[in-house]
Image (cartoon, rainbow, N blue to C red; front, side):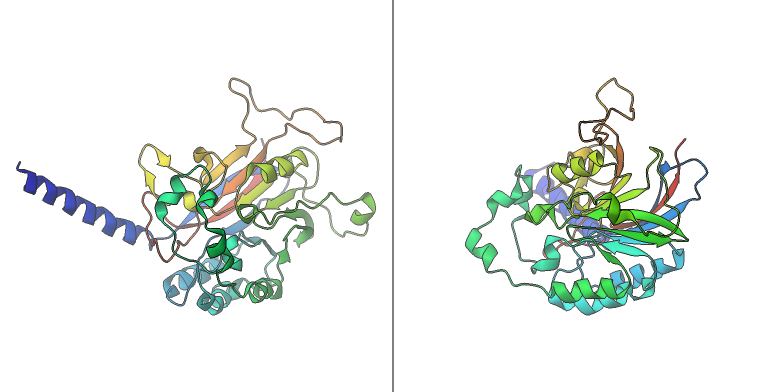
Length: 333
């Protein structure tokens, strides 16, 4: 094969791969995942996990796909942020979430809910911490998004705002505890302290109990950073839900995600895992009590969504389809 011929073959292969990556980014999938986190005898509970919609006025197909998910009839809807790319996505977001109005739900925001998306070199994500490549002056000049209106859309749906806050949900007479933080990737997180015993008084309905014998507690964060995951696991959160990573966005078969854009390891770029991971050669165990009475070694379930969108400037995915997830919480064995 001559050099020009070889170059032509490489060029065609590259063009074909780019075309497929553009197509895959517009090919969403609903994933179904079972999470064995409830106590024996508890009835299953379904959670629809949405994340990283990155809406604009040119993402109508994504809006329609999300609206159709309401037919699943989830018990709870969770949104882990990055709803917008530009301010023009605000009205599409309102329409995307409208069918879920009145369903129990909770949300946190991501950095792209606060400031508009701007072009950044994709190679920066290969750095250990991509934020070190930011130009402070340019960052300060980025246009603010209508995040207060975005927040109001979800609050008006009846969803709990977990921006550095705690809350609870009543689902079929069962109470679920909630804790969340603002986006750790933007250093906006301030972990809320545990409530006093008196703050729990007057709560109606029996709590959903996890397999450690405490009420089920869900944790929400946009970017899955270790400092927040450690805090959630230490206080007995049964299931933490996050987004932000786009599942790596460009993955290699047999290798998986190359980056997570956080300090989370690449093996947890998307999907269900346990946090913290058990020591090598050691079975998972409930652990021991620390001085504060919290179980410092208990493992929580962590679900990281690969999300539904991308930056408008890099509208591609490879071996990492856009997704929403229907999680079914089941009794642990």
